[in-house]
Image (cartoon, rainbow, N blue to C red):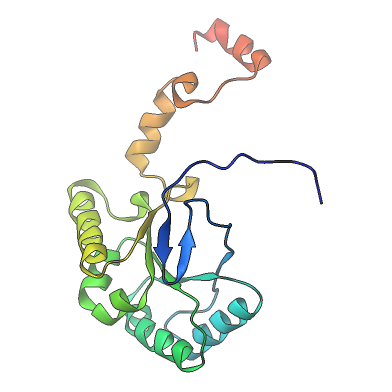
Length: 185
């Protein structure tokens, strides 16, 4: 064990199923399945294994209609076996359609995970994102709006790269900053 201490940021607690995240609550373990969510039995089995290994939240991919159609069955299978671990739906590009067309999916998930760069492009992006938020409100589900390099909105990424780094809260190491001076950067 190391002696490093970390200062936690103040946050508002959010309930995901029966688990409280943030707000001073203990850190929880989340895992993600690597099964095809359309295979309800295999996914439920893996969720159970992850929960038995200590996962307090389990994320599943909801990437197509076959997967969305099985989420309710997965939840029911887990409930029947006494495995109450909350399921988090990981959506890409078509989440707005899947949550609308498959209400059992929308209800069975404890939280929706949305990456803004994976919601849509151009004029459709805002309406598709809004639809997902409307579904979360309708079913009283929290939403995790995530940002990582693999799912950044391309327009936002270009804009961020054009902003001088100190404005983003990032600082250049002195030797790199000095090397950029002659180029006017």
